[in-house]
Image 1 (tube, rainbow, N blue to C red):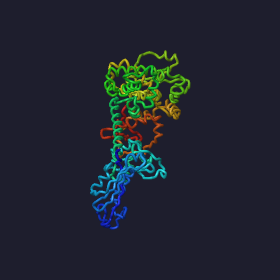
Image 2: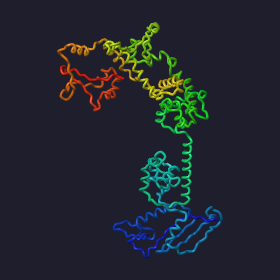
Image 3: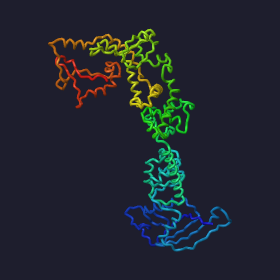
Image 4: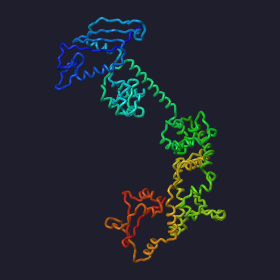
Amino acid sequence: MATSASFSCRLFWETNSHNSDACYTCSKKFRSGERKRHLELDVTVCAACHRSHAHFLSSTSDLEDGSVMHVDIHNDHVVSDVATQTDFDFFGQGTSSLATTTPPSIIEQESVATAFDIDTIRLPFFRISKSSARCFVCPKYFVDSSYASTKICDSIRATAFINHHIFIPENSHCCSNHIDATDLKSSAYDSIRKCYDKTCLIKINDLMEMLEKLKVELKKHISIQEETFARPPIDFDNPSRLTIYDYQILTGLSLEQFDDLCGSIPNSSLYNTNNRSTRMAIGALLMKLRLALTHETLAVLLGFSDRITVHNILQSARAALMKHLIPKYLGFEHISRRTLIEQRTRPLAKILLADNNDDKAILVLDSTYVYRQIPQLASFSLGYKTYMPKFLNKKQNQFSTSEANENRLTTKVRWIVESTNGRIKQWRIFDKVMYNTLIPSIGDFFSIVCAIINRFTSTFISDTSKDQVIAEKMLQLLQQSNELKQYIDSLKDDSDRNIKWYNLDAARALNDFPIFSYQNLMDLTLGIYQLKQSKSYVIEHLNPNGEYYVKISNQERDLLRARIQSRH
């Protein structure tokens, strides 16, 4: 039977000719006041040699006691007495101790390290002390720590070994607060570098075990990479491949909304095939609508074979959504008249256009204004009352005060048309020129986008608490004349009072110009819609030097004039 190669060592140093003013091992003289370390037989060594010796003993403390070497050092020579235990005794077989003793021999001191390292290897690594009772980072005993004991997994051991040159023995433990997600915290690594020497003796068996763990981790990463390369760049079937932000950018929906949309389609209408799954088909259609990508681009991003396959997938997804999404969230049939009045009609619109009648439904329609010269008797006889902005007559530069006031009642309600169009144009397919092949599907695509907006986006106005006040004020001002216009007209008619205008500057500053609060501006504009646009609207009026001229009258200090660009 082969004998065990493991052994432990006990050192006995003789000091017959040793100078106590220098380290016995490295012969380095002690500085004044330097602390001296003592080994057995009162041998004096420096702190560095004592630390190396203690580290060696701790790193070999778990070696089997199958072989014991007694080493006596006499100056430059070593006398050794080695007893070797056979495998029979190690496993408890036999009735007597089968041991062979090698007679003492003289060994050169340089060969001592070889004897010590018969099954170990010295590496420039930080070696962690192995203990299940105390943390190797703090180091605190777990019974005294407020944090739980956590066993270090193989992936963390591999990361520490490769990236930080730290050898963590198997079954090592540390406090839970030193671990962050799947690795040790940077503060833990810094603490290890300060507390441990960057050199250690590692048993060959332990090193082989660590290399096996590294091989397992390497195979795992290679497998993940191969699986990643085999999958398309964008995979809606794998939740870990895309973030919540990715879903929002690619599909216009959050992850939860995308899951809800896919879950609303029965498997019988859009079942999984070899080419695509239900989620991939819905995702491809949403990417087409949201980003206006070509079929070839979708084929590359989603891993489809060619543009024909993409076309067939889009048509399948379109048909499924038209069948199961549109009837629930678009059209006159998807909502009752009572629900429309109670939940989808603003109090402002009821007061301005329906005499505050809770039984009248209000619809805002977007259409092209074309004169057809047909009276509205048919719609009027059915009880429909229509409002639309007025047109300027020929040779009319602007509306009269009463006409402008009546227009404002309509535009105050119909602005939602422009906002809805803005939401629709966020789906870029409607903001670009379409290919002829998509013409038959344009209507369905538009319906699908509108249904998605109705299903997953909030209403434009959430706070209607001030609708009553705004509506009453607008009705109060409806018949009021434009006093400023009348005053300006009177000045123009008076030839003796021609108005001259000068640029407003420091010499003509208005110290008494009123300061408006945000609430004053809201009262003046009858809401916040105009205020939200004010910043971008003002920028359009600045000249290349960033200046905007306001003029003041030479006769009436309370008159200001500015050139305003019309809305577009």
